[in-house]
Image (cartoon, rainbow, N blue to C red; front, side, top):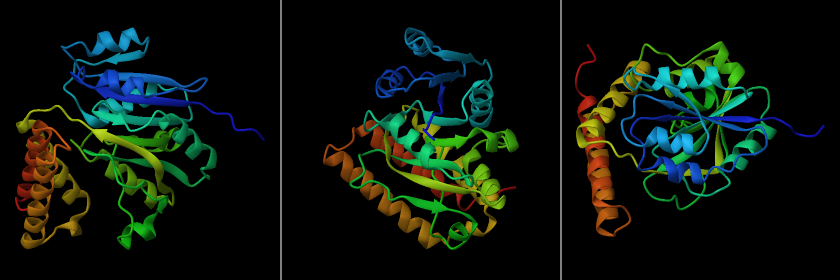
Length: 273
């Protein structure tokens, strides 16, 4: 039997004009594929750019919310698989959509989500193909990727939509549900993107803060010791400063990543309630 299915791509936007054109230029859709923009009240040229590409746009006047934006996009999609790509992520190659299609073609019934790799610099090597299930997760040999670059089986999402009651880490909550149901996740070799978040330093600090606090709430036994977290912070700071000195990343990117790391650091030690 020949392979024939389509893919919907959901991109969440909010004042994303600095990156959205670069992202769209690297998405080479196949016959029947679609792109859906879920915008949370952009005041720059984001929507103008989207309409120039004749894309389907869902406009929301609500403040940006990860889960609500994703659920709105998934609800509008017409394909059995839905890819999620952050408007801040620029695919490293022009064959990202084809890599997603290859993943779909080879996915078994238990496979419900695939992740790409997102980083501020191109990875030195492709992420190896790996399978995540309840066993590998509990053994510590698999931790899920995020919704910056991922693909979901829509029927599984219909059984469990992204939790709109949480402010972030909706990807982790969904993954925990999936492996609890006996489903599996994968990393997709070659699927990677450069992360170019344009948020303010305050936004990036808050992002790191919220991500860690939500992860702690979802994984109560994941809390690390002070020395472990401090060591990770020092390594993180050293790495991003080194990248900036070597001109691998611009200084604004360095400061944004450092702000994110600081937010994550402090969130490890404040009570959740």
